[in-house]
Length: 358
Ligand SMILES: [Zn+2]
Image (cartoon, rainbow, N blue to C red):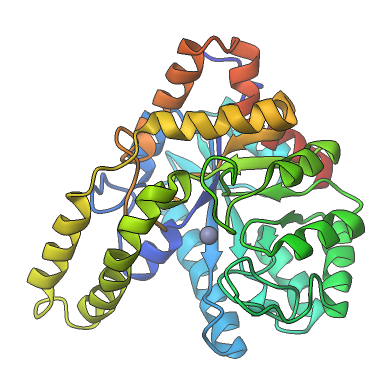
């Protein structure tokens, strides 16, 4: 029996995308990285489901899609009342653990669905959204993206500053993953509460704009904030990123066709998956290297995990799904981390931010 006050928290899981396609996660479902059976097997107490929308759709379409993904999440959770429940506060998560249930929170990945209207932000909060990643792969009305080659605002927009203030007021966590460096420093300047990077790796180990520099990690630590290490192999290892990128573009194209015509594109989809699976993937130990680097840079109180499961085409070797999450604990213990420090990394630090912000 673990200490009931210690929660294992995965702050970013893209399973709603699979729910949208009709996946049934009340059963074991090896097609994806996550289902409620394997969540329990992996000893994971809390998962944040990402309500993700792309920057490359119209704002009205994004608002509608976000609401559909939220509804799918409620549907899926209600179908497994013996395993999980939707949670809205840190207290909910702790109580659910006492009852032997997992807690499913929702975070919105991309602020596009709120358009340019704080009342929509309010409504999404009332629907259960407890963090918002300010943007995704492109600049939006709130701020710039780390992926955009040309920045629009050089940080937060004037509307973005209002969003920060309103998120602080509502008690919604600000997620700084995906945003540009200038936006990141603006957020820390304007937010009166700690923030999180719900799924980000270390730039010192894999030099990519999507990852966080040591200076950023130190700034997070100084504001009681947390970086949650992402499991995505291309973000863990730059060499892998370079090998993987062309295949990944091909994968995306074929997957889109396969979604529309599953029978016709079955073979092509299987072949591209095989090609990707043929690559030598980084080991789960590399995830722990990033955790250790963040600990060495910002201290033990600023690090956690955000798998990005079901949002990634490929996983590290040995970390193929949520049921494998205990390998991280084991590896940390092998490297000499104490039980107390491991508890902080596996969820304690993120729980502290939840208590502080919610
Ligand atoms: Zn993401």
